[in-house]
Amino acid sequence: MNSDRRDFVLTAGKLLVLTAPAAAYLEAMETGKAEEPAYKTFEHYWGMIVDIEKCIGCGNCVRACKVENDVPLEPYFFRTWVERYHVEGAGEHPDVDSPDGGYNGFPEKYAAGDGAKSFFVPKLCNQCAHSPCTQVCPVGATFESPDGAVLVDKTYCLGCRYCVQACPYGCRFIDPRTNTVDKCNLCYHRITKGLTTACCESCPTGARQLVDLKDARDPVHEFLRTHKVHVLKPQMATGSKVFYNALDGSVR
Amino acid sequence: MNRFLKDKEHLFRMAALFAAGVVLFLIVRAVLVPKGFGVYGHYRAGALEDNRVRAPRFAGRPACIECHTDEGDRLKGGKHAGVGCEACHGALAKHAADPSSLKPTKPDSKTLCQTCHLMNVAKPAKFPQIDPKSHMDGGPCLTCHDQHAPDKEPKK
Image (cartoon, rainbow over all chains, first blue to last red):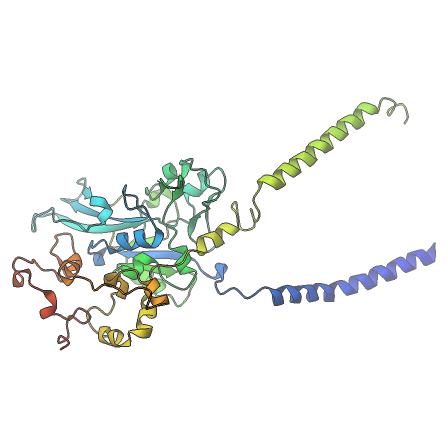
């Protein structure tokens, strides 16, 4: 009986000692096999800066987005669009228009010196950190990625439209070709390859800038310190990561 | 002891039924829950990769400048230095990957310049804008302006 116990303890001890090198060996085998991925998901946290004072309403971003992301041209669905605001006075309801989402630019509608202020507001998915749209999805087909983009899993989307209704910014639409939801995914296929988004690439004035909030060298940190920025509908507590510079209070 | 297990058969039957239910649940779950679900959160981890795979259509400025170094130099320091090449020339990733596969068409300056520089009340006041009716009768822009360096002397 005694020798049995002795044998058991010895064997167990030997096995225990062997597990550490075995685990290390297996790990080395694993890492040796798997190639180091070029894009490290957990080292980024994406967002965007939109500078209202630089936007000229040319519609380049809208056109570029449609090309890059194969967004149906008509009927007019958008991953990003531009709105024109015309505010006559404080507290007045603004006059807002967005002809074809700004795809063909903005034909002059107001007279110069009419005493009102006019400006353009580019809109896109706000890539919320606590997004209402991801919370209502019944199948987990839309989610906040670890690197801060709100993505859609097209293979599992049912097309139930809950998220379309949940988005406070109206950023989602049902793609009539696939009957699944589509939205701005911050050009996820581009930003993970080291490129900027199509809208930022084609913005002639730099009014839109893709930012990586986890990158200490990104000029975004300096920008957020030195500018008075705002997000859309902060009362919704969505954790929006699209920061607007010089945003007027009339913008909804 | 035996007194309690005297009519044990129904207990075993129930246990077997329960075990079968659990096994059935596990099988159905394994079939229905997609692979990688729950690795990062309440979604399929593979969806990240699915969003990544598409090929870009805009090549990005560094890709253009790699070959067109002269235009890159011309842009430097000028008023259009911050404008991406494809903002005017369109999406040209195909051309960047294989220059012979797609020859870019020359943009029509008459309409293209006005896309940005046409007068509009809503544009920032500092941004240079023209009214084609009063500005050189809407004549060709490139006679006087160099599209790549509008504030430098036009290239001869």
